[in-house]
Image 1 (cartoon, rainbow, N blue to C red):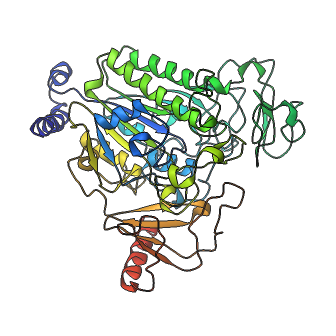
Image 2: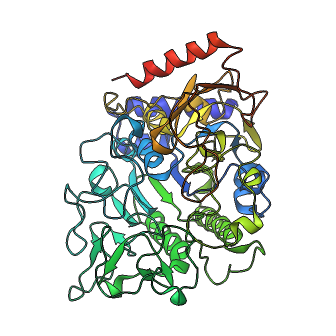
Image 3: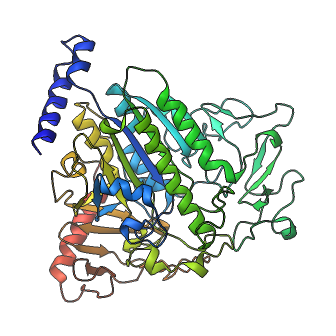
Length: 512
């Protein structure tokens, strides 16, 4: 503890006086930690073996053994686009329309001038990179120009380098984008994307199921690429098409290139894996390895990915002073559009860690996610924290420790919980807001009470995943301390708490 406190004091003082000391002297006194944010996709609270998962994840477990395991940390939303938006901007996505799950040809949701976590890190002297899944839109009001310069994008909101898939693996266009351009595009074979009607002559999953190596189950029956039918239609771009099996290795290679780049600056890397999102198609070396179907195989692949990142840091002598954060964008889903045996080998109760619901849901498994922080120089390993923490707070927390101001009028929801992030505070937030399907909200406090306001949403996710939403026409109140599965509604027996929480949530919603 003394070592950690001394370092934090030195870190803060170095930032405070850096304007009057030579840069070399400050660097000698204070070595800012590198930061690697590993942001996974659809990984449930119970999917990692350190959280009780049945697929072995030894590399991720080592993060827990050497770091801090959170049991009460949350993504801001039960779907990917809004959770990513809030994490990067410090503002809950539900505060404005148009921030739901984005189509593959959406225009940029985060525009130049908006406050962001990477901008904060840039101002703190970091070089920054976004590698992996993006799914926050690209381009101006008309959307991205796939055949020209794709702008704005990650580089316009605080990243120095980006290598991304534009949306998700199950959406067209099925290409990589590096900085402002599609990778490997032949200008004589331009890309055309349409989410309303078919373009080009590529076969579709609906009309040509015999060409598929993984059958669709619902909503994923449009253009076939690499033997998988996607959402949306695409023509052209043949030379630029990805192979799903190569995602993990490609992202690791790009991360390696960024980390080993010569620079006197520390680095911040937003490393956003595609695993374990659909289509779940692992590299050939992992196929069948889990004996738990494709979903089990991509969990193994995810664990390998984490192992490769950690091995890289070790080989470069960077592990000791690198903060590694591992977490997920939302909770788990089994059948999310493809017939991949997920329901055969897994149950929602287990992948949700015993919590109710899942992806899309207002129930706990929708947004309570694995969250691990490893920083050998300043965090004692093998510890567990029950502090209430939201991913929206990364912006203010890193701004605070780096003595960097930020635009709180834009990043209106982020709070500084650096002490909780490094295990020095066991309480964390007073409360947080969860966003579910159809922008329905829930509200959780650090005393364990949870409010799900009455709404008109369906009881089950309506298109096939078989997930309870937690929606009801009447207000619901739960005590997560005694009832973590949210089965006992206390709204009638505790009307004072219900009213108090409704008033608090309203005050948050009208905050400007």
